[in-house]
Image 1 (cartoon, rainbow, N blue to C red):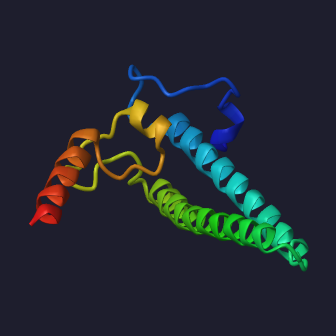
Image 2: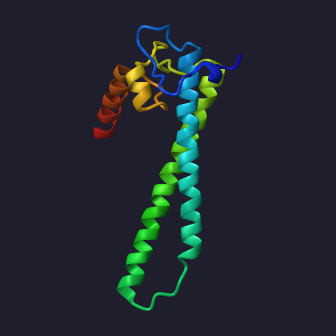
Image 3: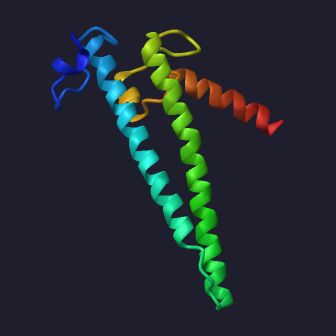
Amino acid sequence: MKAESFLPDDYHPAEDEPFMNERQTEYFRRKLLNWRDELLSDSKDTIEGLQDGTRNIPDVADRASEETDRALELRTRDRQRKLISKIDAALRRVDEGEFGYCDETGEPISLKRLDARPIATMSLEAQERHERREKVHRDD
């Protein structure tokens, strides 16, 4: 029996059930897939918009404004491309049974954190330690 057949649409992972049980795993798989599909759809719209938007604008200020908008859009798409690769990595962790566990400590990542940021690879505490270490090294 596939997990999706028993997962109601209004299901949300709860702390009182076994961590990363079949229902939770399927919930996060769907969440990640939907997020990726949304990003890919936005990306397709951007590419079409950029292809349509190659027009000759005689006013220098208008052209500069259009170029700025295009550069901003391309930076946004680049960030989304990186995000998609993080989503793909999270989906691999789901498939391999490693999703939801901190890379640093091996402990479960809180369901609240995973629900808010399903690409998280560290618990909140480990992430904060990591960021503090990064800041110390950056200040040197």
